[in-house]
Each structure stands twice: as C-alpha cells, then as structure tokens.
Image (tube, rainbow, N blue to C red):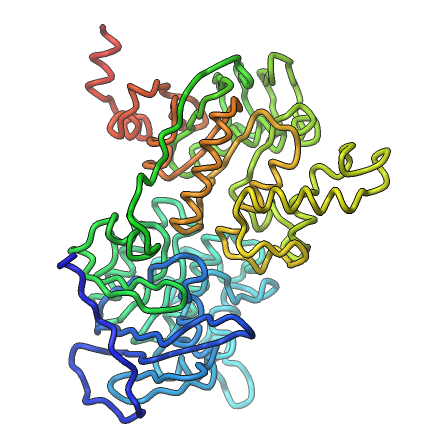
Length: 529
C-alpha cells in the first residue's frame, strides 16, 4: 500500500524542546499508560498539523480514549513526552490543558444537569466582579457565543431537560469558549440527526479555516472521508500508521485497524422464507408517529426498515413491542392478533425488540453482566423453581453460554456492564434477547457506536438467526447496512410506508427517492410495466 504514510517516530531519549515547526502544532512521542495488569497505551507516537482535522481510528480498546484523556490533561502518562508549539508539555489537569489552548468534548458529557445552559457553559470560568460572579457579563458572553456558533438554546433551561443533541451543543460551546488551538471531538455525531450532523461539519470546517487543529474520533467510515485530512490507526494501544485520507481505501483502513485481511464486510444471508411470523395491518400510533402501516416478516428472512432520522421507523418497532401505544390497526405474531401489545406480552409470544439506546433503555450499567443477560428469563422454568426460587447454577451457565456465543471479550460475568466497550455492551444486549425462546427479532440501529470488528460479529449473529428460521427486522439509519443485509426493504417517511422492495429491486437511488419523496425514473418505468 504505497499510499500509506508511516508518521510514527521512535521515542526520543530525552525531553529536549524541538525546533518550532511551522506545520506541526502538537506531537506525542513514546506515550505509555498502564491500568493494573492492562497496558492501555504502549509507546504511542502521534503528530497533529496546524489547522487539520485528524481522525483517530481503531477498535474499542485500541487506546484512543486513553490517548485523548492524556492530551486533555485528564490522565498523566507513565512515560513518554508531549510537545505543543515545539515546547515540552506536562499537564497537571484539564484546567491546565485549557490554559494551554487544549479543549475536549468527550462522548460522555461533563455537564451539571440541575444547572441552566448559561451556568454550565461558563462553569468554573465565570467572569467575576471581585468575589462575586458578574451575571450580566456572563449572560452576554454566553448569548454571543451561542449566536456565533449557531446554537439555538434557551439560556435558562436546566440541562437535564434538553435533548442529547442540545446537551452536545452546550458541551461544544463550553469547549469553544476557551478559544482552543487544539480541539478534541469524541464521537460528536453519535446522537445527532443528519441535519444536526451537517451543521456540526460546517462548524468543524469553519474552525479548520480559522487554524484550529482538531482530533476527531468516530467509528463511521463515511464520516471519516467527509471531514478528515489524515487518519492515525491504532491497535492494542499502539501506533499502526498515519495515512492521508484521500489516499487510502475503506478496505485498507479496515486491514490496518484489525490486522486481518479484509473479507466481505456484509455477509451473504441465505433466504428461505417460511410462514409469516409478524404482520402489521393498518397500525397507527396514538401520538401520530406511526400511520396506517402494513408490513409482513416471514420466518427465515431479514426485512429492513430505512428512513431518515425522525421518519418514524424506530417508532414502528417500538409500537410492535408495546412501547408506543397503538390507536388503530392490529399486530399479529404467528397469526395471533395483539390489539394492545406490551413488552411482557410480546416477550411471552416470542418477539423481542432490541433498543437503539442500550445505555438508558437496554442495560443496567451498574449491575453484573450475568444479571443483565438473564433478566428476561429469570421466571422461566430452567432458571427458577415455581417462578420464585432462582436456580443460580443454571443462571450462571446460561449467561456464560450466551456471553460466549456473542463473543463478549473479556467475558466477566460478575463485572458491571458499564465497564465494557460499546461493542461489548451491544453484544450483551443481544445475548439478553437470546435468553428466551424467541422467533421474531427487531433490531433498532444494531451497530450504532460500535467498531468494525463488533459490527462484523453482530452481522454474523443476524445471519445465524435468519438462517435458523427466525424472522429478523433491521431498523437502521446506516444506508449501506440496510441495503446489504435486507432480503426485503420498506422505506419509511413521515410515519408511513412509502415503498416496498424485493431483494432484486433494492437500489440506493430508489431508497433515497423514497426518503425525500421524489420520483425515481426506474421505479416509475417498472410500475408502468
């Protein structure tokens, strides 16, 4: 791969200042960090040019978070050296980093939920009048900043009442008000709609034009090509390579990240449709998010629901499971009607909904892995006596078997789920869905926020479920994912099914026309025939 540029340098033997480089703003050499028996970062080297967007790319556990926490002052390295503007840099804490012009917006926000937007944005850096906070100046500065960044927020609103996207705006405003020369963005689009994501990209491009250097972490490959100048690949806490974005292919990136030869990313799923296991007839929701939906899912097939964020596709899955009340229509599971579905009744009938929000809806983060996996099945005969007395040995064996089946690594049955990476948390969530005798699986955004290797394992699970004769529904905003995995595809717009395609009819062009309500010439011609 002649296009790849290895930008790693051997760690220097001393911390002598470098000659100021007009191109390089920031550099680390030989950074290492150990947490107990785990070597999180091992002799890592990295450089950041002035005014560039530089992506850190790697699997969960590759060391990306450890590296950016060091750069942001939240962690101190065991060994190695950092330089900023050619001068050695040793940071005591996050405030020290901010004084040097380094700011970070982490995936997990550092906001005070009971305080207002205004109070959060300048928290710890309030303008003062003697020993008192200058409230007038604070409000003026925050209002001017939000207007400059294009964020439409109520200054008096408590942060706890904001959507995640709005909370992200508050976190971004906090970081940008320090006027950083180096900005770290950790999975900044994970909770944003397409419109909000595009607005973020425009802001990033504006900052780049102003000379701000940006370290950007994302698992979304399309995003990498949309926004970045260079990519540094990490694996097992080590530097692998730095590449120019324009000169590397997706296949090469995956090879660098995983250390394995690139294979088919999306598996070929054999289709042998059997009886209809799930059908919706004229289903509408009480809140209007789902409108007169008809669809069918048969045994042995994968059916996709595609649409823009907010189109109502997730609400269809939630209505089937009883999380969104149904006002009209009927849901049938294996031919039996369910007028008012509820999660308990649908689980008992062999249907499970795997939520897109694993942290808030799907998992108990402060409880052990074993409890999370077996929770839906605790009252079943195999795990309890008379529904009251828990068979603890059986529970542990079941959790271990399902955890190993989903390749949760390392599988710690007694460890809290919140300590796992996003990919492992998603695998625990799927293992939980497998703990009962289930025939219909509804996956809502099954690969959101997980790395490439975890994606491949989730896809393998979906393939195995479908080929074993189960009915699988995939609700996804990742267009390549839903295009490649679906045997049939429904397009959702404004809560309605606006198109239905068989495997041979599925094209990106036709799906996009369905998203936006425009006419697809090929579709028109086939309908006239």
